[in-house]
Length: 381
Image (cartoon, rainbow, N blue to C red):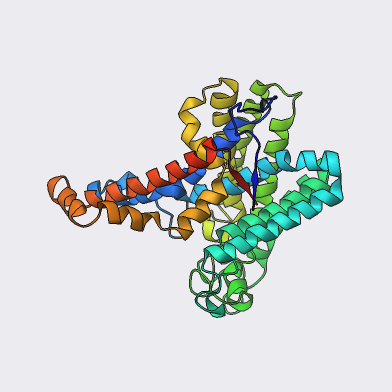
């Protein structure tokens, strides 16, 4: 990864020309998404042990079919990658051409994929424990193929590709029989995606003999990234008024949610196989969130409240990797664990000490993001 020296979003610095065209809401939305991964998820889990409120317990991932709050976090990031690549690749296309842009996309995708291998432990526990698929690996695959679609296809080609991936995935999941089970079964362990992982995915798999980021489910995930690409093209279009951009994102989001739930009547909404209905519903929610952030931050220019999200969003992958490689939880426990945790549990409520530790972990993440942002250190793959 390399360090850029460009002025961060929303600031002016010493550059003679401020980044007036930079969409601050995109960095803020990326940071909002990462905010839950950086520490808020841990806080919610800790808080649930303190008050045991049903809303909090239902925010966790759904075991299989359906949607809980956390099920929106990963697809939102996939969607944002699609939006962002429009801005990151357009200049390369204009100044260096398709070949240079293609090399850039493939190189970045490979680097991100290798970082994903390292994130899950690399070869530290032996080759048989290497996880070939995972969050960063999926982001790498989605970025690469959506980036290539942006570089080499026009609007019609992108639409056809996206539709083919979503409908094609539905078709093979519905009509291709699983040995010993038959066709059209979407239960865990009995569906085609899980069968493909069991038979063809080597080494470590997250859920025993299959993986939630498995081989076949990359197909609809790529389609979701391409859908984000269309949102990026909309935002980049200077001829379209901001009011119209927001309206189209909102209406498109609502339409996708409705279509997704209707499709879910036959092809259930399941994150762990990234079903096509799951793609439509989560893309719809992502579009509505993007419209909301864009309206508030870029149109109304209310930006101060989103500063922590922008700090994280400008270095999202760096923060994600840092908090995995350097255990902030252990550091927080060394500062606030032991007698302090016991005192808080005794004086306030059971589990409150752990809640304080999780809040401290989040603060560490925010301080790191702020440190990098204020010093204009932006690490890009």
